[in-house]
Image (cartoon, rainbow, N blue to C red):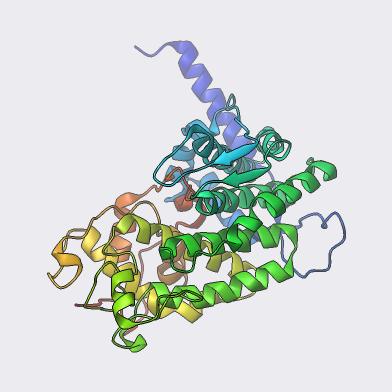
Length: 415
């Protein structure tokens, strides 16, 4: 039997949420000026989610439209959304390879909690969530000095991309973050994160590079740093074509930019021994689909941020992304893979990674994307991988139904 007090609480909670959502739009459409009056030309909020996207998702949640309404409910039920979430800041985050020490987990989870609270504020307008996000971010900026050990760069990229998304939303939709504290957080991102992305990782698996690109581009926008942003764009343009293959690249994929892998045999070894290459295959496909998912998510994050700043990186790599999404989605959904590809036994471990990319390819461009659409709809609402992907059905979940453009080419790549 349901107790009357429980019912009353539920009714009051629903009424409060309705009141918050029916309020006027948050200040995203008219962000406050940069504290130092910077004339960098960046648009704010402009990391992954911009003013138009904010207003769309607020309307969708307020009106109960899917997929945002269900995604919002899922986010509210997350431990990251609780009122009593407490951060665990660390002075040194040491992350050795193939290990996951508590400090590394704490950093990623606290960044995700700050982002979750920032999104809750962005959607509802409740300042308590913005204050909670600020408490988490301030706790870390007062303490963190460095990342160390072999996975320091990747760890810093996972957390850094999430911190930047959270900080950008709070800074430009809430006026209560003191300038001195913002400056301290800026310093943390510049000195404890950006420096990690300059490590010599050209010959590493490409998801590292792409995740660092995502993080450095996001941090650049938050810092109003045009030099870092432009460097991130150059890095994107070099790495994406070397990670997602098209037959037009030639008999073997392009070598990783700036590395030492350059002969056909070295490239085949780098692609996990693959001898046959087809449209959409990724450098890590024959390792596992999980890491390809990370790469797709990072590529989408960076392209979304660039798009908000007036640069359409999506168009430059559209054919590659279309082929990669359809190739991996088709096999993730169960279609057998030919023996010539990954020995016919791929590791099908893709996570909630394709909402942003699909939101553009299918949602905006209306490309057919039959397999990508099916996979994304099957996995909705996408929650979080507890690394650097979070709540993307809410922020970027497009309506995948409706007519598609008649596009030929790589909607259905075949071996």
